[in-house]
Length: 163
View: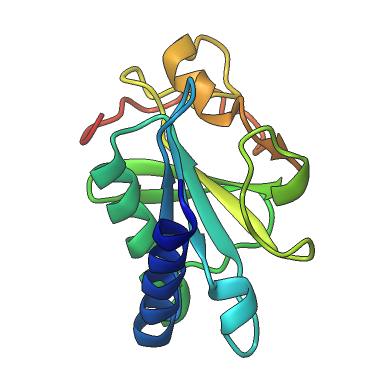
């Protein structure tokens, strides 16, 4: 990527942060695509957690990340460690705290940024940390340095919604 292209990207990111307070960055070159928010941890006052998501189509990840930010700003989502957050858009959602700088999937965020990975279960309703999870869904967390994982549920309910 040449210097001119980088300057254009930087300008666009600055405009998005000025307008919305963050932007969503997509990384699609590699074995598992991932997306993450940027700006919440360094442009907001006070700083807010950033979100990441991996292993799905870019439009789906962008939608869930934007929704997570909106829910956090409205007080409906208060990330505080690993947990299950019920259904969103008909889909079960889990949230996992991650270390941005020690993850193989690099999140270009400040060292001190708090970040959470948004995770969805497989077709059978199993999350990546639960027994029997489809390996392609388990790959959602493979590129991240997870600080903690939610406790596995004893019997995951069947998932409905987007996959």
